Length: 139
Image 1 (cartoon, rainbow, N blue to C red):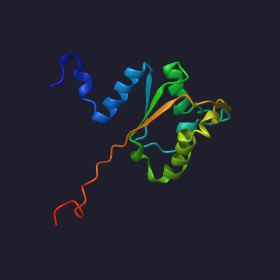
Image 2: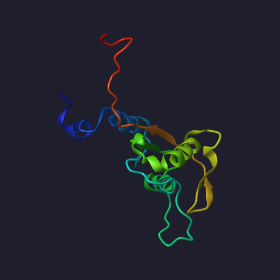
Image 3: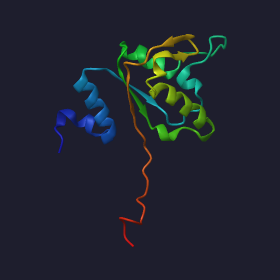
Image 4: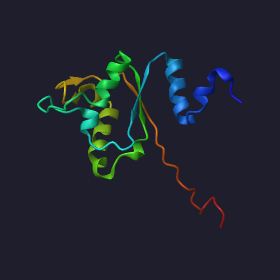
């Protein structure tokens, strides 16, 4: 049974609890980006200021929210992206997570490369798969 002072933390799934514990252990702030229902890569990358409804993407907003250049960014439920946007969003994820590319991430709202090389990304998936019967399961 967890201590009562940490009861709110224990209601969070274990993988997320690990992310918050990691944040506390490293002394780095954490920002959560929910991928559930994410409909476009523009949500991550921002939209050009030429559009009236334009705003920075979730990545730049996470940096602003934490106020540091080396936060932990929790990419939550990355398996819950809409099917129509999956290819575009996964392309942005490759750019975020690839150390050869993430030092010049371009948010279309600010239209200037952002260095994400000091950011620690933690990916979490929500999908639970049924165990396969086969080699190690019942025959």
